[in-house]
Length: 190
Image (cartoon, rainbow, N blue to C red):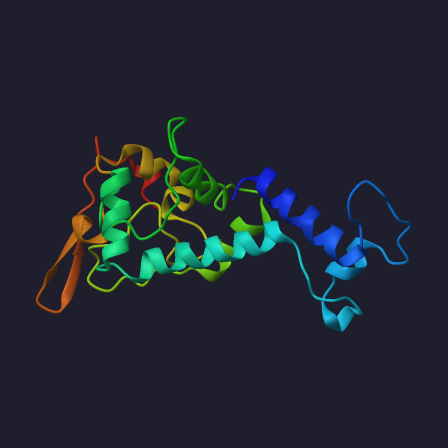
């Protein structure tokens, strides 16, 4: 939700709980910040509207990756031109995107608390390898392969492919086939 809407909702809550009605203002015996604290911290557990909204959006993002054949997900993907095999809602939102798309995109901005929580809480399960993005999904080690192996990533022809695009199963063994723009030098083979 837009910040101005969240601020208006919080103002209405504050006026209700603190007794501010109309033009006449009162001196409050308790701070609004104290009322917003959890009940364990001697507050009323009202909480922040913005944080609750971020929590609901995070749940929405989680369900977006989980429910791959649901109607609502297919509608969102069709409306915004997102491939159906995308697991996470973390692509770059353009300036022409709706406020909803931009708000969901802000959940993944580096440095925000929500981005840290989502990165720690969301994990990719490889499965058949058709939905997990080889270079950009975090699978092992806490960071995507494009950051762990930047030189190979820059040489890779396919930067957006799924794991299935980078190899094949021969019998019981998996054979990697990463196509590079040039051969690796001896010093690059580690």
